[in-house]
Length: 406
Image (cartoon, rainbow, N blue to C red; front, top):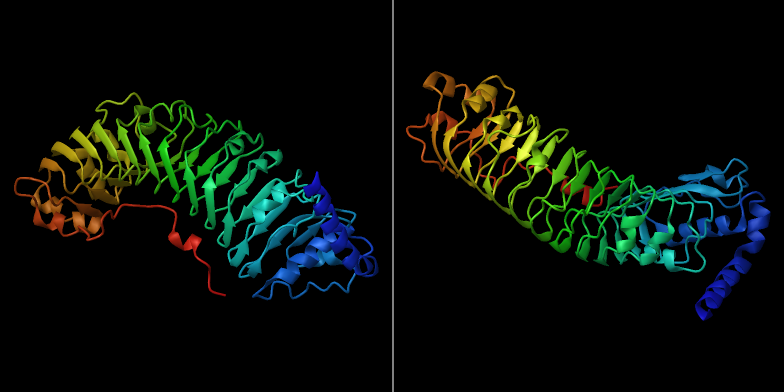
């Protein structure tokens, strides 16, 4: 109760300071909204974003990044940046009707998520919260559960720490969650938001096994690479029949790869840099039609199934595959339908291609077969190998986490 009283007193003090200018400069915009905009401008600088933020005019709703309600009394959308610097801490945001808040990449620091625990803050109308590419720190408070209307949450490329609160998994309207490029630790919570489509927790310090049935059947994009996740995945990913994008790369997952991951509508499957083992299904129950497949740097063995010939980019290097390279792969490379084929550093012993056809590999696609005991391989094929550790890797560009030049 004392905290609420102090918070109200603090707001009352600030309100008293700005009250005269509120009524003389902006007779339409509600005082709390006016006060919030003034506090934001006071604390941020570094670009010409605020060039038309003139509080001596009546129409504040024409400010850059500001959208108001039809009667011009409340701010309902606020887009800040880019290239802003400064610090934002509570209570800088007192916008009771705000539905969308976005802060573009810049050099802003502070702990803005502490608003969610502030007695002055009521963001129950918020549907979009996007604060990316800055230097915000602190944790994600459990009070984020109060954002019952939130559909998209993107806090990527900041310096957030602590665990992901389990309450975030139950936000009923949530469709997209992006927390990549932070310093979050602990385990991955269970997500049971019925409308959830995207989860991106890439490049954090998350650890431990994925919980059983961790994600709802609605999910179509899951990105968990570059964490410290362990154990098997078949129970955590069971029932995800709508996935089109899956990236589990560079963790410590083990066991077999569930067969359902090779089935439509999967389009991109990135499982590289783990400890997956065993053989791949030679006759899967579905038609494999995945455009990008990366199973490199695992412990997979047995023969390479020809069903993967539908891929445009296929990386199975640095495993324990044996036998011949499927002739279907050769045909797809020669027809320019397969653009990349990386099978280096396995135990493959043969390839059905003559010298004349082998000469076309260099022109038709990028092929690497080095480090296999293939009998008299066509030398021209190995010329396409690259010094990159995993040339077929495709992931979210790192520049998205960097502050752009003004």
